[in-house]
Image (cartoon, rainbow, N blue to C red; front, side, top):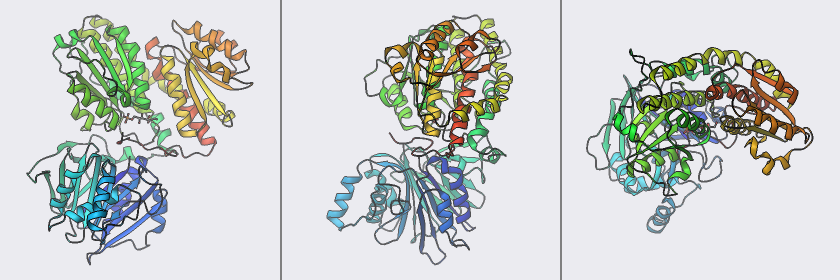
Length: 610
Ligand code: F6R
């Protein structure tokens, strides 16, 4: 969600803050703003609805003098995205300014109290303005003390930062269930809602923990708990650099990330076998007896990660012979699931900061289940919450539409499935090793698919004026159909749906009209002939069909208007290849329509609110 930046040091802060916001803009881009404490201890605020570019246009040419400031890009929760609701927000006397990510759930109650007791007048529709008013009301000579007292009053999930002209080189930050990362510089201190905002300056970071307060000064950062006792966040070194946060010659981050997938998959497979040829997951050190006793797995995730979870169900059930249920993290804890010591919960999240997934993991732990996180971000809240973590090594994913996170999640989950199969003695070590060898061959095969980009783009451009697109598949093709549809709808805004192809005749086939585009996954496997029958059914009703099929399958051509071929692999490994044309179709349809693929409307990366 919203992007947060803060800097206090010896240099003017504006450039550092705005550059950091540019790296965070994928988190939210409804409006942007900065607050800088000027040398004569005044707060200068600039804020503007729309993207960061709009804010940049309003900034004075010579910049704004001041070495301490905060900045924000917004994904609106309370109040429409306009100039007034943009952050930072001021207290009534203009003494302090606040930026905020997340939701203060009891803001209406606090607002009423402030109105009644202090005659407060609020100028925006945001919950953020309540933070500014309450911190000001509780100020008794110490900004950290006021922030601590205010934080105790707040309910919800939030991270916020405050500057105050009475302590002009200090930034105070607080957080609960939303990320806040601190950067220790040689000559100053920084904060950001994401390491991407800090990476240009430092790779040594500290994640603030829930209900901690950080006090940033040019000399360094102090962390306390809500009672003021000294405390410490989670320190770690970021393992990617500033290059990862650049487009490197690609038109968009999404296209760059699509093409980074072979490397990301290869990285995710590194070091998964020990000298004896056994699969190892070094961050998963459960007692083997516990793994053998596991009788149920729940996979919880959201969006694209949920689709990767659906793919993993087939692999875990087939290889490790444990029943798997895949659930939306946002539904999981509201339906009283049966969780015991023998239940394993696998929580998947690229960012490791998705509020629903973290809440599902916390809930599962509280009920006695063991939780394995599958995440891309070392030091993320989900990784810290889980009992064990399997890291994907996708590197920084900037585009809002997830691509390389998906393929690396499938790989990490497949390795986890093989590990479980090995530990539970459902597969011989050689069988596991053989499957891993096949996975290691995937990056080269992915390159072969990506080399067909121009052909795929040409097909995509033809369909850019479609009113709807249907994706159909069976078995592992089903999550792929859902993912293909999600990708297309989120970046092109074309109505797209994914269906189990066997379900078409139970209802969705009614939607088919003459020339309506259907994309079908019909790679080799035990359900291919079934998918082909389903394709014939939609073609008989006028659909135009694009097939994703296995190289060498010439027969299937007769049932399609267009075919994209992918190399032949093990049935359960196809998703890593078949998703590539689907991503490229979505991408090129969106580009043809002139969409902003990296920052599609209404969306934001890293959904830190429920
Ligand atoms: C879609 C997309 C989202 C995310 C979802 C979960 O392209 O990116 O659906 O997959 O918001 O995010 P993470 O994996 O960070 O928990």
